[in-house]
Image 1: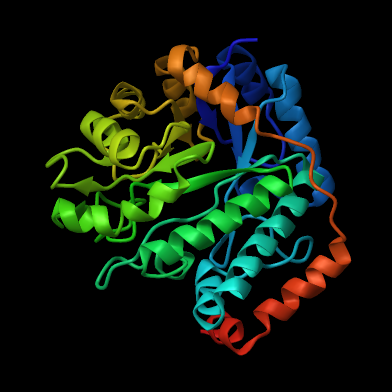
Image 2: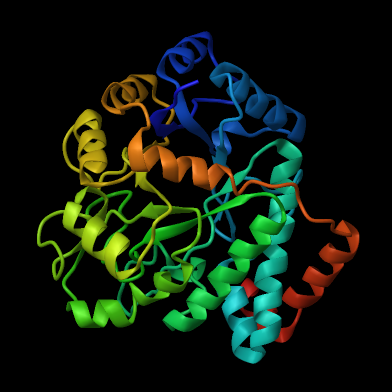
Length: 344
């Protein structure tokens, strides 16, 4: 069955009749869940299966489960996980322990997700925060040095893959220097390109072989003076595909965020024209979903090949002693370095 070049959210914990009819006709490539979609483990598993039944295929189901401020699954039904900065602090004290903790935390997240049928996590965050930047990234980041960020992000990605969940690296080519929250308005970064290549962009280069990435709604004036990376052909061709070398499936960040201009239809068309393979729409508003679908073509050519290659990396989870792994992870984050950041 053909799939169209978009990923969609849903309004609530179960599909409405209107959503079912829309999804059957629109054939999105994938689905994404938010807290409004989540009540209990049984309910989430049922919603995930319902989405795939309506799609008529084993469509990918995504979620943002980073830890810290960004985790859609949480207590009392699921564990709380620490933010990326905790792993950065562990890495500073002992690089080997920091990498092990980041990988194990992601492996445990993957176990939580696979129990529900969710097979894609919008993790790791490879953004490198800069002094004076908007705090929207903040402690979600692993640190301020690109080599450290790349190492920890790579460990987290491998942990997810070992658990049978595909990672989505974000927000390529970097949101850490942004001077605004792109949910609310468009960030504009005026840093010179040489500095960007040595910091923000550099953190993504070692991660270029990951299967999926999500763009940043950020303008980098040294590369494109007007358009954010999501809708800039030069940013995608020259920086994301070129300098960084990413050749996996590129999805936009949420096109309903206020950083982008124009109608939802305009934003969808602009992101796809710029070189995004698929468009992400998250808020579950059916009228907006219809605009996205109307402007998203059937996946074809390079986009289709990248989508197929990404999904081909889904695999059965490697064996894991879950009880022992959770105990080991608790020991990692209970160290002085991890505990100090977790309590900050």
